[in-house]
Image 1 (cartoon, each protein chain N blue to C red):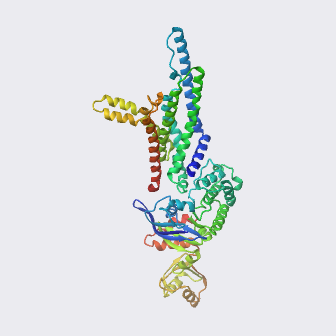
Image 2 (image 1 turned 120 degrees about the horizontal axis):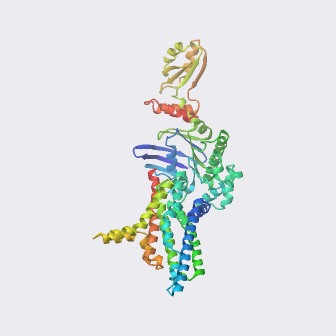
Image 3 (image 1 turned 180 degrees about the vertical axis):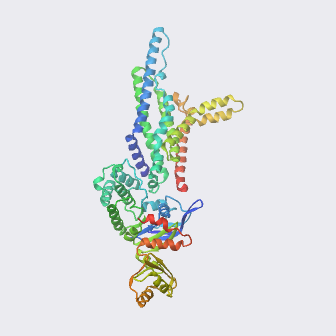
Length: 258
Length: 320
């Protein structure tokens, strides 16, 4: 516990001094900001038009930030935030010091994961500013926003944990980033793959299985609409725990690989 | 306290360390000596629990280095060979981080005290990347000392330092040896002779010899080659020397004669001296060929591998 906290504090401090973390946060916030302001001006225009024509104005949830875009962008954000975590320790040889300190692999891997997840959480909390802006303009759907944010938070945790596996596998940060991005994209696109599979006769079982494996099936249409289901929460937690377990095992095998 | 018994490490079919046994006692500096690639780092990694042994046991501070790894890690300070450090941290920050993971009380005071000890206190707040090689080495050493460990394992701590830094570091290691069990590896033989109370010589994964440097020298001088220099020409002296009962073989080497004594016999030097004088020649020099550890080392490798002719070549570069 003490060891995990020590590692967590160092990694978090490092993220706040790292140009890449700022670049990622900046790009993400800028992109989402532009997107949201476009969304708002469209809504305002439409509602003006609707008011003149006596038509229905758009619904409250339309005022919410489209977190679907945010979770899609995680295939870039995740690898960039995690690629350094373990690959750098291997390349610099500092892993030798870490592995001869009185702590096991789980201690420092969990510490590093929690640090990067905290950083992501902070960025996520900053995006709440759009929700506040939404309140100035109209009445966004707070309930849906809650589901969206809980979902985006867990979704991010799962993506970061999966990306960490690749950082443990290779010493090369670029390779780790590419493989992470590919893995996250595959998990993101699992739903589309499932859809095309379901068109083939006799494959509906497989199609459902693939759909449930993917990240989107547990976010899009459920959490993203404010529907909090235990199975989705369990899915994300399972992915986080599973990915961290695999990472720990991979780091442990260093001893045997020599 | 370190006790190693039949420790072996194999990578596939390659044996990096082959059933070595030795011990290192508290209050002593034990030197671990060998050319590059002899198996020093592999052995140290096994002692610190970084690598599991293929077979055999290593007891460090009374605990098994692999089965009770966590206990051993608490008792050991380790400086890896390439001194891995976090370059973007300050020296003080790095030490405090290590102290926090190790659960050292009064972290800041302890980190400052350790920096003082390795004489780096004035650079406490410098980023590690701005420090020179010698200073980084000292940060690494401070990291190994931060929790005041019973056992210190230092892998080639003097490599890459300038001569003054080397001297300082040797003093420090000698000083540390008074209180801790220090295992110190080097490929510089004169260094081991200066710093260590005991030397373990390892080559190609095997222990070639171990003992106090002085003791080693005595053992080796007996049965080791002898150099003879006289004022007479070698053609005349050689047959005389060769016929002495204690001499197995004699050969000319430049202006000297190298004598290989018979193993069973006593020291041939008195007999050689007498023979020279009785023939009316003047004896200029008569000494064991191995006068320092460097030569002892060459001698040992020659003896151990007399079958294959080349082992000496790789050590010449190591003995700089």
